[in-house]
Image (cartoon, rainbow, N blue to C red; front, side, top):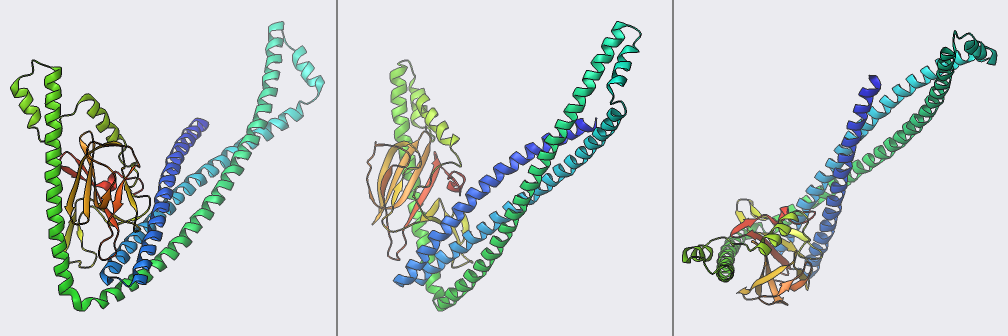
Length: 418
């Protein structure tokens, strides 16, 4: 029974360990992505300082770098916690193995003593010859053989368990070293975070006298953003209407007996009426949630999705219908998934937008200075579709939006390592 309980515990511990290994891998990938974003944010900030551009841009970039640094610290803390849990589980395994090994050695020692006492060939022969009949002699011979095999198996099991114990001890040593490394990393990152916060405070003090003008500029920009969001929503509705008109015509052709009411229902639907092929595309897109590539080859999230305090004026709440990803001047934007271009629109001077349809999903790429695709084009994943605008303040950022019909979704839930 104790062995059965140990086996159950061992299987549970191994399965839990596998789960933690997968979690560690994901956290390591996230940490690498955050470190990459921090490096790119630092490069962008240094470029701004060298160009002596707007202090407000520097403050926004510094604020984003601080957020990334905080996320990195949080990620390394999670890694350290997982390692602590894993170390605890491995220590339990080691303790259990030690106990089982002690029992095995104790049994084996007793067996050796017993064998020693009856070691002579004469004793074995007498044991067989003293049998009352042939059947008893045969059973005694089998018993002696089984006893010998059991003794051999016990010795082999002790060897296996000893090697397993050594392996777990080595693994424990590696994990403890890795945990210490993470602790050192965290101390370093916290020191960098404090330094960045102090720099941010200095920058904020330098624009304190311009707070009124800054607040007015922020509100004006928010109004412009809302107008653009309304244009995008209107364009999405037009695209849905066009798609449903085509679907209604295709349905009428495939089903000549379709009634006027059925055709009108398709045409007037506020959601895309998917064809069988469209359902496949939509399902494929949905299946890749959390695994889509970024719309740029490198960059960092300078504005996240949803309502949030403005990085410069905490008293102001801003809304973002997508994520803004800052990158280097001259960078191309790329499609995150295969689909069909349904719109290429000029929203304002030097701000073009491209809509790509994926079943009843749309990906929207905003703030482009030029595009390399046209309406009706089929695009593949990672295909370049245009160049990103660099604004008057020297900021190069693509605004990336995901919608299902007219519902705006959080791109941070769809892009990999975000």
